Amino acid sequence: MGYVAPFVLVVVAALYIDGDAYHSSDFLSNLLVLLLRILNSGMSDSGLITHLSEATAGSLNGIGHSTAYEEVATYSLAVKYLFLTNEGMTKNAKLTLEPFNAASEQNDYEIPWSLRDIIADERVSHFFGREISELRDAFREWHPKTSILRDLKRKLQPITRLAPFVGGGGFGFGMGVDVGREGEGGER
Image (cartoon, rainbow, N blue to C red; front, side, top):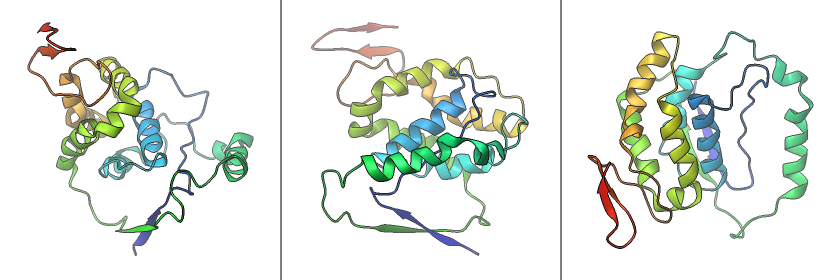
């Protein structure tokens, strides 16, 4: 049985990561957090979080997910969001419904394309360019232990071809040439 996922700016999406198991350099955790920040900002994640959810369902590190229920921050986030946010820039934000069936298998060959769509979005690179660069750098240090996550790493590998973030509008997938500000550039 499927359900409909609502997307509207007055609903916050959150992710619980156990502090005992979390390492700030963990590529996959940081990617998931960034995707939720993008969604919570009202921008599209091009369906990447849906694709990643198949590989990340359950515990990533062997620690059960029941600790989320015992964590006070889980509930305080919801209360803070309720009382400390406003409607944002748009009044009467339109509710968008996207049908989703969890039983349907996703085409995971879309993962590199979804990643590319996010990176190519000028709004995403404007607001989250530094985080995307940090993800690119952290990717090299990510050594997944399971075959599912190793396969996922292979599909996310195009992130390593990103040119360094200069600031402003958009990333490019390069072949080793960095394009900087007005005529600055050179070989990497």
